[in-house]
Amino acid sequence: EGAGSGGGRGTGVGRGCRCRRCSSLFRVAHAGPAAAMMIHGFQSSHQDFSFGPWKLTASKTHIMKSADVEKLADELHMPSLPEMMFGDNVLRIQHGSGFGIEFNATDALRCVNNYQGMLKVACAEEWQESRTEGEHSKEVVKPYDWTYTTDYKGTLLGESLKLKVVPTTDHIDTEKLKAREQIKFFEEVLLFEDELHDHGVSSLSVKIVSIVNVFKINFFHFYHWSEIQD
Image (cartoon, rainbow, N blue to C red; front, top):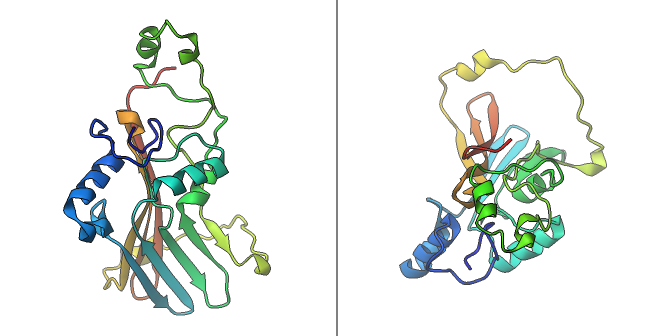
């Protein structure tokens, strides 16, 4: 089987597998070593940008190897991880005094609730009826949220500084963000993506834009799936 959330995470790329992870690996295998750094439409990179006392860091590289994916899945107590898992991708914003925040895929998956009510796509009942000969096929061996829905809000840095998140009445100055100023730094980092067994898509990414006087971070969790059963 090919690697991905639809089954085993073997090291081989199955010719019959159509998941995006396997398709990417298949293309890389035939394109040569130079293409190994070009997965999902971008090149591996590491960028640092200074903004006053802040250091903005964006690191992007290839998807995790199958062995690393299996190890991380065991650590997170999940039977499967997203098909395209960028475990080394990170966006970090850190102050010169040490505190800051970063966004990474591993911590995001730690915030997935594997014990909440699981969604079933519309074809689930038909699939079960076609396999009535095996009662075990109707059982979920290990519950997990196969949409990888997470309430992750970033990972705080600087534990020794005893950071604490508190509510605030301050508002974002949207007018300042609308100002047409020169963009000094821009980067978008993909953390993971999965096609949900060909029933939709779930992806997590973070984007940062820095202009003259401010920088803005947008954290996106996008998902779409086929018709869901009640």
